[in-house]
Length: 222
Length: 330
Image (cartoon, rainbow over all chains, first blue to last red; front, side, top):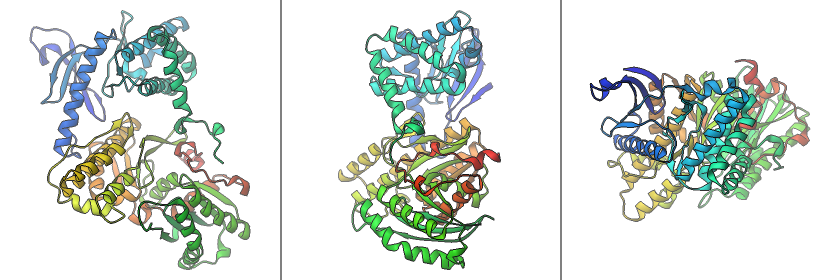
């Protein structure tokens, strides 16, 4: 068992398929283990871990159906609170985005936008769209590998928040190319989502104007 | 240097006197208690105005100083209730111009963090600030105090107080709910709402009240309400700790009085390998000393204001405030 990421909610382990599932299999799998929290009463702890494990597995599956590459889930263990899924080989978009040539970056961002639109059309919001949750494979596919904060929510507000989070993630990790990258994401999003995309994009702007994200100069409360 | 800080964002009118060698000389408060229901902003402001003089005199006397010894006036300029903020601001401006000393406006939420850093020696904590008026997870990052999570609707203290009021418990409801929760045996499933890093408590409050009306056991409901609300708070705080990789956790605000919440945060901090701090209760609630100390920090680091720049800001956000004292010493 190799611990590759220790999150607040879950630990990720990289393991051999043959060790975790069937001896005849090959390749690597990721085991996502939602850990028990001592601070919660056991009933609430079980309820949250079980719901979230099951929900994430369903989101992975439905994302795939919607045409968004995501790891195949091999096992849903609602006793051990583990998901066993494909290990996606490739590069984190976070690591490569800034170093890509402009044309390649535009293509990648449009593809990301297209995939977000596909999720939204399927009634899914991702909930944590950051470039560290996206893996670019050698074949040029972009895998969304973490649906831990995802949910089924077809509302304009949820979709707006989803895009807004991505914009903020771009601004914080890819400061110098954030604006053009976000614009390209929106291009891809609009082409896939259709004419109602404008409403979602308008909502993003509205969300930004709310108290939390507003710039000091724009405020007028005196 | 002596700073006199005036707090007046909501229930509490407080005056604290702190010196620049980090010593709290006095900290005197009076708290408005509504005759029934929740806080009425105008009544609270009238209470503050009526009590300002005696609180001020009390603070001067307790500090064993003369009013003429004061070198700096600071006051809570927000966030808070407009009428209360304006009353405190008026008192601060009058004092500053009469004494002819500088005046500094202080952000109430940041003052809570700073007084904890002063007294507990936490250097760079992730702070869970929970009260009747605020619910925020605050941590310093990239030049500002950032809000890593907050309530999308009502603050957690308000959730508990309103529940208590609706089920007929005396106000403030927090201690009564905590006492009854100790005898709660059965966990009743209530809405647990964490959206990304943010929290929501209005559905939880409504559902708990509804279940009480439907004949649910009050002790079990108090227990379940606390467990559900606090687990959500701790989860969001834990995420902020994991994200920022900070090694300190601090709890402050009126809800910090709750021993169950303290225990839960302590457990989480241990799991994350972080130290856990809670300031003494008299410094967790609203008071003037935190305003005075933060005023000193701002003044010492070059924050200068003219009287006409001391407008109150009812919705002044934590992440809007320049904190030069944090930047200069890492």
